[in-house]
Amino acid sequence: MNVDRVLRYSQIYNLWKWSARRNQPEEGRIFLSQRRVYILPTRNGLVFAMALLLMLAGSINYNLSLGYLLTFLLGGMAVVSILHTFRNLAHLTVSAGRVDPVFAGDVAYFALNVDNARGEPRRSIRVLCDAEPVTTGLPAANTASVRVPVRTERRGWLALPRVTLESVYPLGLFRAWSYVQPAMRAVVYAQPDSAPLPPLLAQNDTGDAASAGMGSDDFGGLRAYQQGDSPRHVAWKAVATYDLLLTKSFTGRTSRELLFEWDDLDELGTEARLSRLTRYVLLAHRAGLRYGIRIPGREIPVRGGEDHLGHCLEALALYGDRGK
Image (cartoon, rainbow, N blue to C red; front, side, top):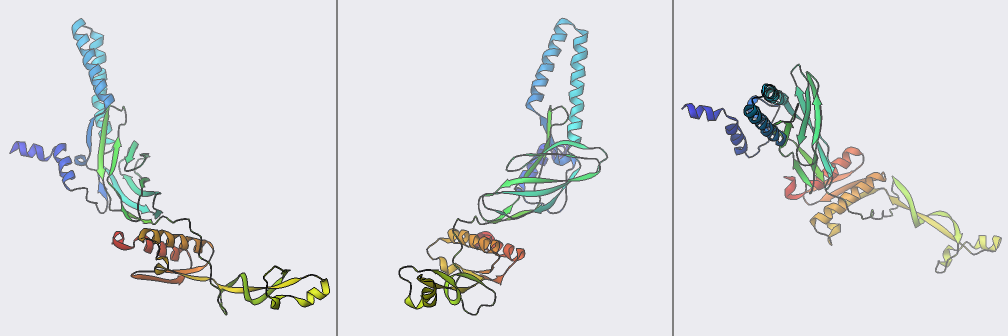
């Protein structure tokens, strides 16, 4: 019975129990109690311990009083550093912050709020996840926001993987660490391809319209005659006046509203269609056009603005199984 109680409150048992949960995301605020913080010697710590053993053996062999003094002094400093390393990480509180959408292939930054409720500062805390580690410090009784980078590969929802908080402060002889996995996820947009925006269709009597190229609606001016021009468009009065062969040019009226449809891209596969539609949406938004999308199972009507851009990109990112 005593052995079971010791195992139940041991660090090995806690680590095994945490791993058995298969890294389930944790809701709310995550408190790093003593039972969630683990500590072991670093490589430098093991070398330091071997050096102390050699110093102790030499002091015993040669009966060196100063050798004993230096050995036990350094050994005492190492023992005290265990407490400082452990306390530098224990009793922190981690909670989920904000994460912005990104495109596939970019790095998503998950913001974690780390709260230090104690009256002493925390120093040199490393946060590791998927990409480069982030090092931060926490003032006494204060909160810091840490942006954890995570690489993205495909569109859809991206859940925050397990995050490791570790510290080797102050001497680097021991490493304390803890695992957290706040319930956070980011929307990863489909990576746009390099296709140009499809041509705007000329429409007569369009209210919100723009002039676009050659047409047959409104007189646009005169230009030099080119072989193949219709004789009906030749400006005969100008020819008689200036003795030059000139042709009348006309401008059409082009609609500034576009509806991008899934069925218009039959030659492409599913992912290629999503990339192409994402490209169209971005180009239309940059050009100041009103646009909408129609994909299987969903249609977003023609609108404009930043919110509309986000809705369209999210609908394309979450299309199919990855959106569930």
